[in-house]
Image (cartoon, rainbow, N blue to C red; front, side, top):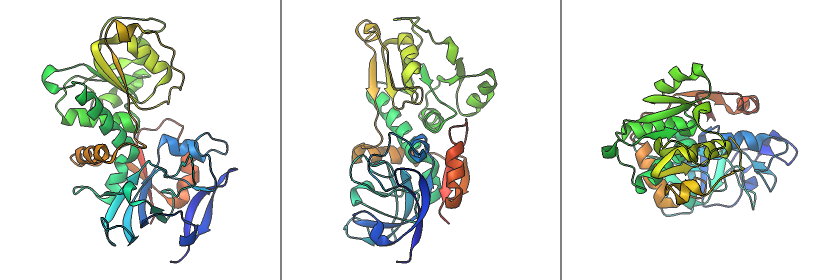
Length: 323
């Protein structure tokens, strides 16, 4: 194999490096990467000092799609189109692993999923980890009793972000008619409605500092965590549930026990990094029924600048074309 380019973090900073196949970690599948994407976790991992990466050097990028060019696993053959998200890609907490921000990646076969039939390598990354997380949240709430027939009131946080925007589309596709999107500022209302909300709620309308408040929501998808979760719990209806999948609003969670013991509310943790294979397969089957998400596309060389700007508020998913 010829040399290839990868965005590698050495513990001090992330830079482009020229690598060879022998520089890649062990694995049964060698993949020519076609696309990756940009997630909140990718932007965190790019920072000089971060709490995401523990072992260096680390090729960044938690998602990838591409074509198998060498396989030591009977379930995959050369030429298969696959995708991979999470696991140890891009942000290893143990042994250093490869990531999606490289022209080639080598991964364990158990991390790969055959590209869904209606997707392209590009459209798969329009969903990526964000889409997978959204689908897992909807599945968790469905398992908890959320059905369209009961017309539940469903609140979705972070609708202008990846998880929230995909979640809105999944809920609409499934026939849920009461989809309430959180807005931080009045000018977001029109945009959140265009992303699939049937109603909006201003963030400051959620109660602050109360153990219990008026019962308003049957279910909620929460990619924010922190103070948002704390403010949301008092407004959940009896027997309701929140699918909690992120920490963009913080990791601390000051709570009282009252929503849990007086209203039987459930807080469901949703993990997309190490989700079981069966749950992943079902989630991607659900996502395969959606039209691709609108995206901005950048080249590998554009990543440093794009990752630096990612924390600025943005409303469109970004995919990375490896060219």
